[in-house]
Image 1 (cartoon, helix red, strand yellow):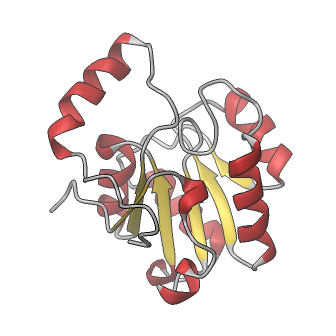
Image 2: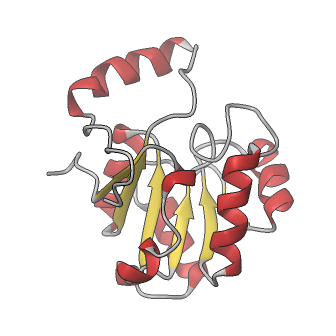
Length: 166
């Protein structure tokens, strides 16, 4: 279905080291807010930073695609040493397609990680890439985020059991 992610993890930090090789994923498109860090936070927390460094050192190619403006995305991407696509207009495929072009590998080897059904998961489906859903780091306080989260609640996947890799 259009709203069902291909994979589900509690957080990006819970994606095991061997998962990407096992699933033939050689590149990741990463969402920013509530996936890698909390809203408006310029750095990831230590747990997510450790995961990122392990993934990067394993040779996994990564790029950030965010609906945020460059002023928000650029400092975070620079901190991690990543390329980025701001104003991604997710769930439309434009941002994902641009990221795939920059990664330079077939879409069959790319997956995207994000915390929202209506932007991240549906965006992956429109772009023809696999989706990895992670639960948000913290609840958003803005009105439209609360509306969106309420609407997506019936579509959310079940939380994975501890030690699960899918």
